[in-house]
Image (tube, rainbow, N blue to C red):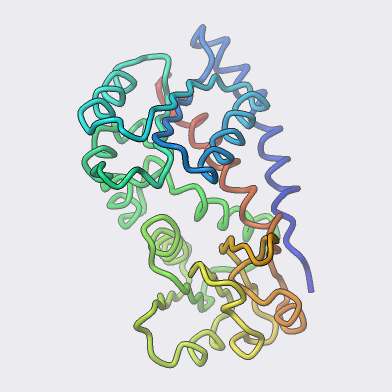
Length: 281
C-alpha cells in the first residue's frame, strides 16, 4: 500500500510558484496579490488564515490581510470586497468561511469578480466547471486531482465514488472526475446501500466530516482512497477513513494529517498565481 504524501507534493508545488511569481513581478512591475478577509474570531479560521499568509510569503505572493470584528455589517463587508475587486494590486480575493450567522454568505461572495474567485466557489466558476471550462477550480478538489496525477493513479474509465455532496468538495470533485472520463457516483446521507456502492469504487473520495466513517468493509481491494475529512478525537486529528484498517485493502491512501490538507493551500496559491498571469493577457 502506498501512502500518498500530500505534504511533499504541496512543498514541491509551492517551490515551483516562486520563479513564476518573480517572472510576473518583473513583467507587471508588482507582485501577485491575494486578499484574505476574516470576519469574527473563529479559532480554526485564524489558523487557516495564518497558514495562507505564510504560504504567500514563501511563494513570493503579496498578501493583504483584513480582520474584521464579528459584528461587521453586511454592507461593510460588501464594501470592502467591492474595493478589493477594483484594486489592480489584488489578483485573488478569499473570504474565510464560516461567516458570522447574521451575514448572507451568498450575497457577500457574489461581490467577488469571477476572475478574482481563487476559491473557485462562485456560481460562475462552478457552472463553468460543469462545462469543463472553469476560470478557477475549488482548491481541495483541484489538489485531489493533482495527487492522482502525480501518483499516476488512473482515472479514465474508472469508477469513482464520492461520499459527500458539499459545494466545496463533493460536487466539484465529482465534476472534475467526470471531466477526466471517470464514471462517477455521488453518495450522501440519504443514499441507500452506501457500503455496497463504496465497494465498487476504484477511486473512493471520503468527504463527509465524520471520523472513521469509511471502514475496511466499505473498500474494494486495490482501491485508491482519498480522505478529505478533518476531525478531532481526544485532541488528535483523524480523517473520515479508518486509516489502519483500510490500509490493509487499499493500494493508495491519503493520511490525515499530511494528505489532502496541505494541497488545499498549495492550490489556493496556484490559483492566485494563475489569476495574476491572466491579468497580463
